[in-house]
Figure (cartoon, rainbow, N blue to C red):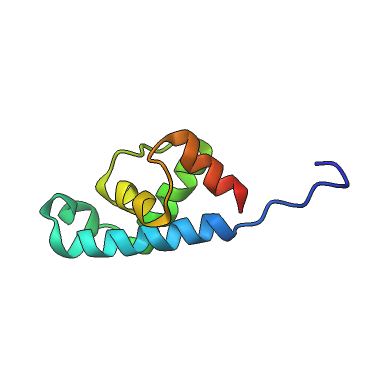
Length: 89
């Protein structure tokens, strides 16, 4: 980072994570496909894990919650768009 570059903030990362946690909360309560993970993690824990994984390129974007979070935030459901959003804020 040069002296004229602003430091990266976490605003978009936190917004994505909170939106994703909301989606997991809904799916944990209504979708049997999420029953196993719901018994092991909170929506917030899973959202944080997945957000950081998407940011680093280590997570899969194909789950329902991520698709819904992208729709809510107006982000294209692509790795490129998600990572650009996370890096922008």
